[in-house]
Image: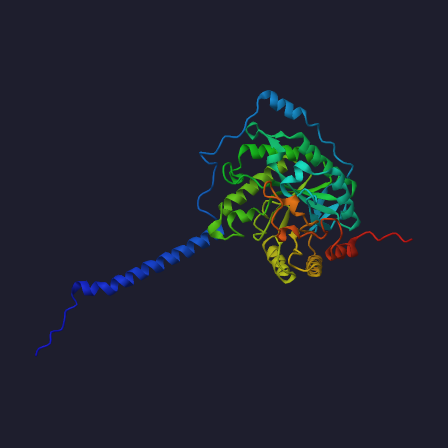
Length: 405
């Protein structure tokens, strides 16, 4: 019997090669995906984001309403604080003396986040500032949300009088307690319809109004033009979720710092970045960075920032929650970070944050009270103003001793 060997033929020849071809295509796709993610991580999305073509129009006031809004707010009267902050040998100076920043990021205990500018009580703010002064702190950092500060953005910068009156009072209260202020501009901006990084005209006008109003106020240590803008190009949530190109954000930093300097020659400028800390260095006077890890990581980050920039360096945010951490652990972490910052000869440090926040102070109606989470427990004081061990650490080092009886 003669066996017949089957012939593979042309089709048989292609089958295994088709599988190889498919595998190569899959591999190529994976490689392109990885390259795309690397590009987005280093540059952000390819195209710059502009004002949406279908964005809703900005509200506009009549001429009479414009005049009424402007007339309702009297000119700002600067406090008696003497001496604008300057820089020398990597440190702040005031009136020729070194000014090591020792501070907290601040919202009033019962009026945090969005309620800060619209509901805060100035008597309570004054009492809180007295607490900071007694603990030996000399600086606060707080945040300006433009939406409640201005009306009719289509008409430029129309101030809401009671909001600015409250801000005026806060600045004067800080000055009365020998506190300097880092004012953070452009907090919680529009990133969708008229995105901040497209530099829309109404946002420029609002920034100009704030800077011109307070340019003669020496109690302001410096302007911070944006809080953690590097998140918007993916440094926290990953490159694939970047909302804007990295270069667009940095171009905006350059534009807004140029605007601020043109309007105000008295104040220093920074931009508080999360992880890409040295990126704004070409545009700012001080490199400010935020740190949520331990002291060993902090030493490494300081070295990396200084290798990339010769600007003074400020640790602008760091902190640890006491939910679920024990309070003694928070104190130990804060002690280690401050010791590391001082040993590294930084320009200063600011803890996040001064106070724990009650659940019914952070919620937005009708979802009240808020869901319990760690964000309510970063304070070094409880919401009833009793100190945690971390506040005792700060007071022990820097506070005013109790007078002897």
